[in-house]
Image: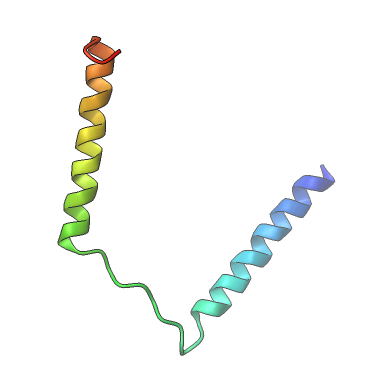
Length: 61
């Protein structure tokens, strides 16, 4: 049980450290995703779903 408390404390400490880093005035936030990124994500999910269905049907063994 002592190990769980230690992990929880480590998570809180890391969260505080990252929030403090992000609140600095010189922190550079990453750019927002573009339309091309969204299209890429949607295509990846669609291809994955098609491959899963093909495996379930037995076309891909």
